Image (cartoon, rainbow, N blue to C red; front, side, top):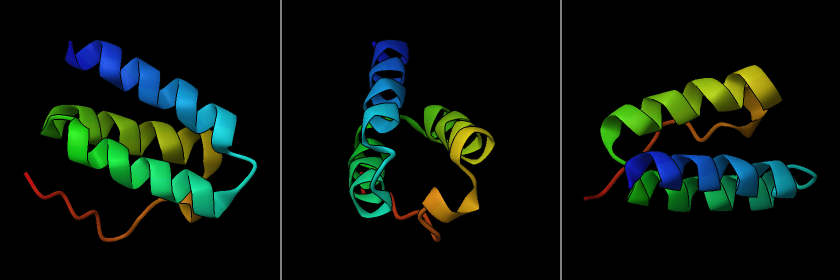
Amino acid sequence: MSKKMLDYTKELLRKVSFDVKLFRKELAKAYQNLVEEDIEELRNWVVANFGEKYLLNPIFVVK
C-alpha cells in the first residue's frame, strides 16, 4: 500500500509543480500520510526533479 501512495504522490506533485505554493501544500499532506522510509525517498525525488526550492525545511511529520 505504501508504494502505491508514494507513486500517487509523485504523480500529483508533477501535476501541481507549476505552482510552488501548491506543490508545498501537497507535499506537506504527503509527509503526513507516508512512512519514514518513503518520506526520505520522496524528499530525494523532489530535489532530483524540482530542486531545493520545492522542499519544505524543516520537515514536520506528526503521526
